[in-house]
Amino acid sequence: MWNIINAIGPWLVGGFIFGVPVWLAWWLSDGFEGFLDWPSGGTHVGVAVNPTTHKSCTAVISNESGQPISYGG
Image (cartoon, rainbow, N blue to C red; front, side, top):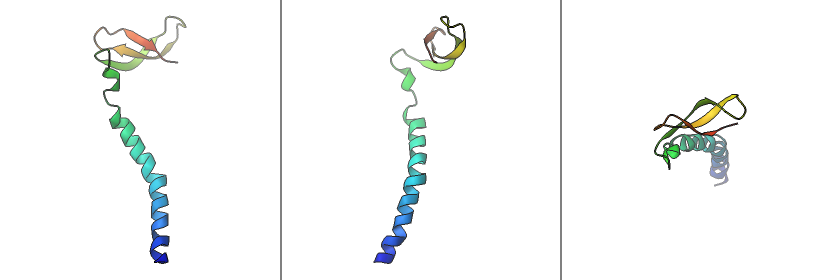
């Protein structure tokens, strides 16, 4: 019985070390697909010039108007 428990332990630890990050990366990449489509009816992340700092940065851009909605850092 102890041989079975000792054999399962490393598999469980390996599963947590390698399996959880792989599952989390898959879930985050597929689970939030379309997240930015709410509530403005369609947005995407692109590059724009921040009018306050006059530097290029990432921005959430409306698909309807093509104008930035908010600027990143």
